[in-house]
Length: 456
Image 1 (cartoon, rainbow, N blue to C red):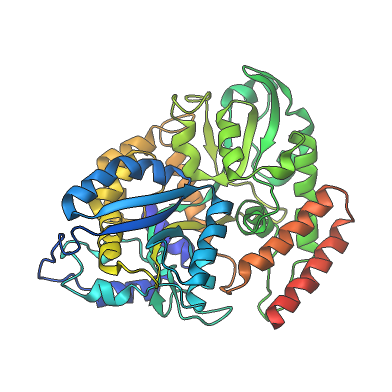
Image 2: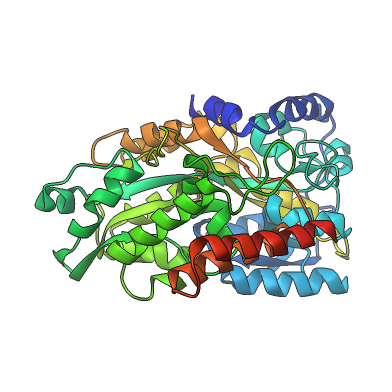
């Protein structure tokens, strides 16, 4: 099963064992809690614009009917949403009761005391439904939301700060019709992709077609996720086994140089400002041959004729191999956390467990929220049938996802200031792309700045 592969992949950090221990500790309660316990209350959510949110919106009336709790929400693009959320959390005003987040963001939030620990709530038989079944979550994915607040280690240990709502890894998506016109094969390595970069231009059904689209804005997700996948394939790491920064190592310089070459040769002007929104929508528009190392959860958008000009003309392949034959794939887990300053914690917890329940999760997956984080969803015939239909041939998406899941990992150590460090790294990559200094100098200057952040 794909879910078991996810356990192994994410388990490269010490996640799986602690998640198993957690599932034993959270034996489902025998008594049934009262879903109407917070009837009449209103909770406010901070949601990041995302396919998950689109899958959730139609279901919210079901929650209100079940609980008597009214749900209001604010929906913003990722960067704007996280900025506004940070302001609210740091002020401790409790404007948002529940919010979308991830382990990376929560390393900052938890260390500041802004998150409500979830273990006591899960263990309380009067607050948690007897059929909630925490043990049904993929162990390593659930455990990624644990941290003991120790900088640079401790993932999978300590308190549970968040509940997962989807899992994504990164893949190479391509247009079979475009490759056929160009007489090209799906690249197996980054060297293959570099060799064909100059050939990936032609007139497509929607005008000029470019070779590659991928996110490339000056934001922490560049070295963390998409380009981060390429970095790891080249054997580059943020820290070596002795804790020494490796941001301007030879392998990091080589990966950065090749990445910039790919973007300059095969992407349009303006590529340096692309976020994941532009990457998803751009590929769906039909104007690109490849979506490089982008989130595999974009597949439902690509395959939906209402949202995509390329539905029925999409293939999925694992990420390319690096110079030494290494395959890598970053991992990202969208999740829900509770504001420790919330004035409606009981209502907030009812919402969180309803959203992440078996039935609600399956409903969201069938409406485009990928990939599942519960075993029951992977066992759902309807979910499997949907995913099996995606790709150049039946089952192609699932096969690519299996390959990615075998190597997917949260590859950066936990630290409250990690997003600030990665923003600085992304700045160095961008400066190199725009010709503001050479790659080595920019990366080494970023490394020095990041070392100072670590020393603070």
